[in-house]
Amino acid sequence: MNAIDSSLQPMPGDRPWLKSYPDGVPSEIQPLKHASLGELFEDVVSRNGHKPAYTCMGKTLSFGEIDQMSRQVAAWLQQKGLKRGDRVAIMFPNILQFPVVALAVLRAGFIAVNVNPLYTPRELNYQLKDAGAKLLFTLENFAATVQQALPGTGVETVVVATMGDLLGFKGHLVNFVVRKVKKLVPLWTLPGHVPFKTLLAEAKSLRFRPENVTASDVAFLQYTGGTTGVAKGAVLTHGNILANAEQTAVWLSVLYRRAKKPEDFTFVCPLPLYHIFALTVNLVMGMKEVARNVLIPNPRDIPAFVKVLRSEKIHVFPGLNTLFNALVNNEEFKKLDFSKLILSLAGGMACQRPVAERWQAVTGCPISEGYGLSETSPIATVNRLDAGSFTGTIGLPLPSTDIQIQDDDGKQVPLGVVGEICIRGPQVMSGYWNKPEETAKVMTPDGFFRSGDMGVMDENGYIRIVDRKKDMVIVSGFNVYPNEVEEVVASHPGVLEAAVIGVPDEHSGEAVKLFVVRKNPDLTAAEIKEYCASRLTNYKRPKHIEFRESLPKSNVGKILRKELRT
Image 1 (cartoon, helix red, strand yellow):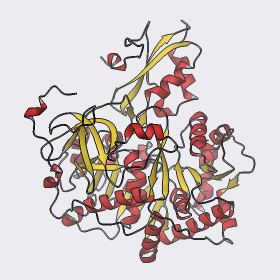
Image 2 (cartoon, rainbow, N blue to C red):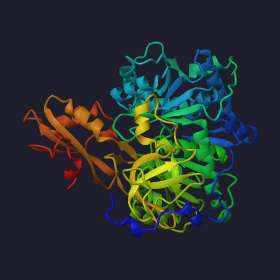
Image 3 (cartoon, rainbow, N blue to C red):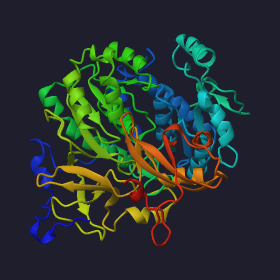
Image 4 (cartoon, rainbow, N blue to C red):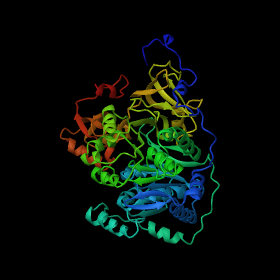
């Protein structure tokens, strides 16, 4: 793994990162104050129900209003006959319905299954079947996909929302523009579906029966490729998420030493709430910090995003490298007032130093980079929030988190030596949903999660990622697993063999490159791209295609992706 003579290297001490902690930050978090996410939310509502919680497309809902609607939705779900532990899929972009439905599911003791709305029917069908979802919430924009994906699943009820449902009178205009002007709603038919507004009307006469949800109850099935291309649901309990929120809150307290916590604390939420980063940082941390979240349904529309930012004073800006890069290259963004910005938090993919330096030059706020995975709820490490500049590392382990750099035999390597980043702490998942064999592959007997990422820890406990053990490609913060793309391409009748690697891309960090050995000599790249378009969501599709006469293989016939990278 590394040619350095380990006998000459210092071994890691007892948590060497602790000496790099800011003064007053404890090594361990206190016992959790709340047994569930619902209990945390109810505590916030009891003291701050009048305060604004979410803003989307100019409409703001208070914590109290979210509380009332989530109770109604929870009561309706209970009336549908769902039982504690049943899975409810949520297929929404960043709209006001997301927090309402997510909190309803969690408070009623059900399990939320977050679904990427851009999934193809094939991807959606697999996830619904694997999770055993009984009910699905979706937006009409994606109902045509749901229509194709439902056969063979156990979904009994589909609730269909519209963009304008919770926007008041303005909602009619929004729906008209979405449907008729932008034509974002393909034709669909779902016999027996329930419109979201009908649900709310029916729920007004229902009474929510509170459930005694505990920290050990499952909150989310967060789907990820894990260490292979087979999608798996990381089982995240209420305790996992609450612990990560508490760990983050302790770390966040350092910010308030140099800048008093704002009364009108405002987070922007451009990353999708169905992604673990925004789910914890925006949905849960925003709730815990009694902050307002400004939801951005489509952050790829940079001019529209900048227009929203112009009318808001943002204090916390979570994002990823590609988004930060797109914004600092927008002339209108450079004209905005960043005087209130106290934290820019990067995750999801490696943040490039040139991008971080341009961001700080434009906003005056350094980017603090963190690291984590769906399996760790997600944050495992983060840089000090009082650092004056970008460090180029993924920072230090959070309180109550142990990180070891291990070799292939599971032994801890010396400081300064490259190995696999392994994580243990209260935020680490309990396993993969119904996949004990896959769980056993990534969990050590003493509770460490094998991340599959290669890194090195220095004598002060700072960690730097140097490579990935697995062949995963990260496109704009989303994991793409070569096995899945290769399997889809290989099913094309004109393809003999296929292999996928990631290549650098200035816009998305990495892009998918596909190597193909043709069975049909007339097969074109355009035909392959068209074939992938109906089977893979956009970020998984090959951007580059190269035809070859053969692919490099090992003695046993395994395709050597490493050689394709050279």
